[in-house]
Amino acid sequence: MSLTKNEIEMFKSQLLLLKRQFQLSFEGKASDAKASDEMRGGSQNYAEEGTEDFDRVISIEIASKGIDVIRQIDTALDKIEEGTYGICEISGEEIPKKRLEAIPYATMTREAQEKIEKGLI
Image (cartoon, rainbow, N blue to C red):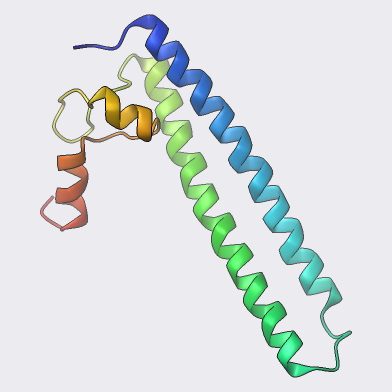
């Protein structure tokens, strides 16, 4: 069962909104990390500095994951433009609509994703 034009437009809107949310989150985490770095040295307490370092590392990790998701969203948006959205990159099968509803930037079926994660592909 192929996706209808309306469904594809709905997914496109979701992807664009999701991308914007990740971009805003990324900008916030990047500024948090920078602010934490700029304030460093003002504290006399090593425990506070350790906590600040930990918070900065977490912010950087979250930002990094956000960048990965933004790339995946961009790939999904490209697939919409190419007319291949909803088709698994590995098997060529249709990605189930329920999977796309849960993860609109999915580019593989769950089965193909599992094979990649297990190193079978």
